[in-house]
Image (cartoon, rainbow, N blue to C red; front, side):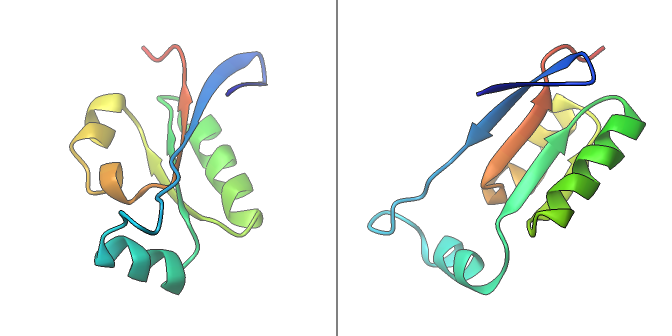
Length: 89
């Protein structure tokens, strides 16, 4: 899905983990806490605003400033949803 916020395009990826193939760790995380939404944007103010919005909707938020940082972080496998800026510098 592509969302337009403040004249900036964002890609939103959502991952569903079927219970038949989910690991025990993923099942425990899904049952014990709110889903984690990773927000990846190079603009600090947008990142903070999007993270605040995600938390206000009842999700756990993880704000990350670059794609490279996200790909090397533990959130790569823990995130249920990824909101990312399409054009980062």
